[in-house]
Length: 290
Image (cartoon, rainbow, N blue to C red; front, side, top):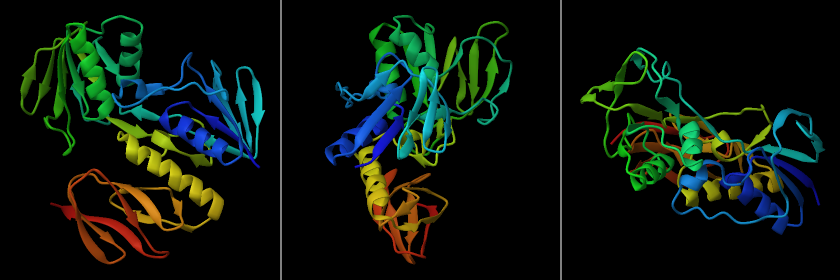
């Protein structure tokens, strides 16, 4: 039996802990918030459960070797797994120019504002097409806030690219390739995976951003299998694949509907996520858009 210290109590961290506990391992989950769930509380299909191994209100500061250093002390185990989630892209990364007025929020900050019972604005544009953005839009609509959801991704139902922000003190408008939206609030929901602590092992959105519960859990299952059985290094180009070390199966995330090459065989994929089988030494790559 091994001892696992998991940093982050979102979907991946909680699911990983539950599966490891079922296998007889000792687990401790550290979460800086006063509740579990992370950003997944915005997801309509996510259900929060109570677990005895979750320590709330504990902020991880660093990972060194097999220990997590926090604001309340040190937690050590045989394995440390980072499940701290994504980060939002910056305006510079998104190529958004213009002034920098108030009224521009990252998704996480906007979620917390709404969670505390406040409104970020009266006319809101959410820039990013994922299940968390949709969940936040629904919560805002429920309290009477005018909300538009769009984004630059080929997976967006409403594909729009933001070019510039207008306004001096408060946001007055968002200039896009489809015209100007007269909004007083922009919520940036374009997100990327990010390791806050530089952990050796990562799961969930800190490793690969997946907003579908089925595939997020499958990715964790494959991670556990690779820990238990070992495996080979996955070689991928033009798409994301997880886990990085596998026994043969990986979850892939495509940049757009298209054709992928799996060990020399081309396959059309029209969904954002898929589970594919790979062999040691072969390349998994995104070939072209459909």
